[in-house]
Amino acid sequence: MRISKDKTTPARPRIRVLMTTYNGEKTVVDQVESILAQQDVEVALLIADDCSSDATRSILERLAAEHDNIELIFNESNKGCSKNFMDLIYACDVDDCDFVALADQDDVWHPDKLAAAVSCLDAKSDRPELYYAGIDNVGAQGNSLGNEYAPYRVCADNYASLLLVQNWCLGCTTLMNGALVRRLQEHPVYDFARMYDAWIHMVALYTGGRVVCDLEHAHVDRLISEDNLVGVMNERRSPVYLARKATSWALEGDPETSRKHTEAARCLLREYGDQMDADTRELVQAVVERETSQEAREFLAQRDDLVMTSGPRTRWLKSMIRRGRF
Image 1: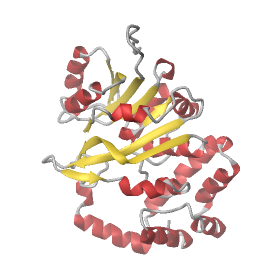
Image 2: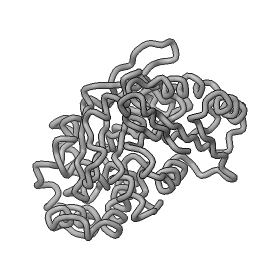
Image 3: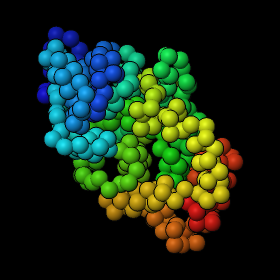
Image 4: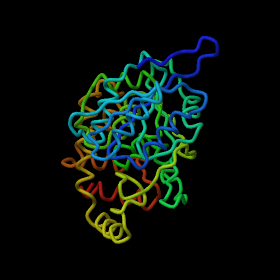
């Protein structure tokens, strides 16, 4: 699917939007329409449906018949969210566009979403570049639940945090230049343990890329429901669940999350270690070795650039690291 250029008017930035769907019949139309309505850019939308069992497929086929800038892929077997996205990225032809964006099925993009991101990146740069922003959570009644990730600005300003803190760069807010997509394509792996957007964020940040954080602004409305994989109002985050989890974390840490962070760091070091500077390699290596090395744990706990969203949370994290609990 080639993005055309109108020779009678100044060329607008060409954005290839990679979208995944799975049983999204309730929300996918609003999302697609908001993507096609983006201002001051030229959009080509590629959608990979992951074996939906509802009406999503027929809805997508109708939308594609109505718009010549929509292309569809129907997976033969269910891949899951991360692999579905990464397969699209690994196969993306970046010679035919200026930037690549990612889209979920249950959001609505503000009309200026892509234009705001484009203004922050350089399409022609040989250096990988990544932009991400905040997100407005919206309840079932249309009520605003706030910009969930704005407090993570302090984490974004501290280099080591991403390796051991929840990822705050949501894929649906991102824009990548061609150099970043090519860097990801150099190492088409899936064993990075964390979500796909955390992997993209890590590759950009720790292999010499330029990362633009715009968490203060939100250009996406995300509908929060029990179907979300992430989100503040997910049913799996009921008050009882949150209380139990907070108590467990305070006393014991989170072994499963800790393991995922270790595996992600190990994958990053294996695939991109030769593209890291010496200080970054030392940092990532310490994350890999902290489970068995008191020296590595102390190295991490003493870093000023390893923080969570508040002082008490940062002190808790470093205490858990020193005790070998995270």
